[in-house]
Image (tube, rainbow, N blue to C red; front, top):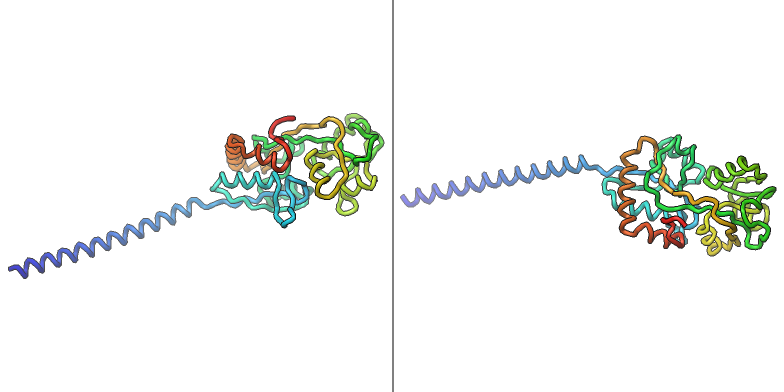
Length: 278
């Protein structure tokens, strides 16, 4: 009798273990499948960010061969705030950025983009500016004849094609019949630095932080003269259909401003807090 009871108990225990094992295996399988489904539904979206390599302190290659600068590091901070996206930089000449955005080769531009009518017609700016961009007349340090933009009549001013400096100068020239000879920068001996150094150009329109960097890094021998011509707000530039990304970027920027990150990056890379108007 005792043997029968013992046998029944043993069989009952074995059955419980088998059922438990099956149940446990089913739970593991279900959990794994659910996790897979969750991962599938939350794929990280790759975003290609267009920028340059020759804008001092903003987007440039440092002595270690690393892409860095104010805009670059700010984008990296924004990326940290947006786990649903993975930002990847694609570098190119500034003049190729707009066409690359228009033809879907990049998803947004990080290169101190200021608002102008042509850009507004074609593209979408985010709503939260990330710094103020002062533009000044800049000349060779030994030039004592030019003190403001009014002194550029009959002079040669060099700017990068499609830049806001170029847009401003072209508009100023036309509206004021200023008689400024506008030339566009190239590479090597045709670069802005070389043309100002050698006297082939009399002035350019640029930012004080760019002048400071070039003077320290390559002995550009430049100086800023006169009051700022513009204090434009700077934004990221996206395609018209990128409204969801625009909103996410703005949300991240607002947080980073509150945390003081944007101000600190500006001080580090631009030499002052250009997140407020001077």
